[in-house]
Image (cartoon, rainbow, N blue to C red):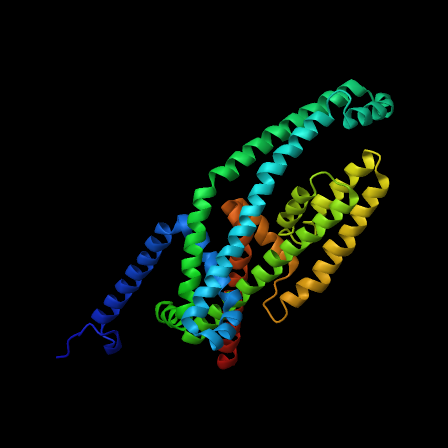
Length: 359
């Protein structure tokens, strides 16, 4: 009488039960691992995406100096670039944002330029029962609230320095590991995931394409748009052009209307304060260079051949990701959405194949 050996291949009920139990244990282990690394998960994800982005350059460099030194050089250069970018944005929002908020409070005070504008506007609003004094009081309240919010944001950014450095450390470690062991990691994922190896490798390839497209199409393009916006704001005479340029770079993560959320209010502010020509320059520069050149010339060249997701789907993923995950959702949301769409496409293809066989 045959007895189970514990080998899933023998097909006995005991072996089947053991295999199912092992599958549940593996799923529980993955859940525990994700729970433990949750505080540094964003850093690991960023490092993985950076590895996908830097892989072609690393391979070319490896042909000259060897794989080990090429990976180390790529990681060091990438880490320095990320640290400078994030540190620069943090410094701009903390230092220049606080200065701008202080200037805004002074502008709505007595003899400020906003106060004079509200005085002139009071002649029109008085017809609907709103006096210039009421306008000034309301504007001062808004300015004080904005200054208070700016101080709280600056304190929050400063307090996250340690966690940001820890996340950057794990990002570089993850980047180094992926660059050194990508084939091995892909093989292990194919062994663990309960799907056909072809499907698993297709999802890994999709994750690689989505990661490259996210960094190239969103992060790199956002930096370019922020640079263009800074130049335009400086030409137009906008106060603190570096701050508004950095705000444009962050707003660029929101597709379609993101950069307009900074350009349009800034242009309106210039026009209201009597700088009509500067307002037209800022608006025209933004439409031509920040939006036109960046979105229709630079971005398509960067993401050429990479996975593309419709803008409406990306917008939904961004908004939902921010709602669920906070600012991390700006990066995680589009990646998860693209992977979910890839799974649905694989399922649809499998369903069509089964229907064809049944027919």
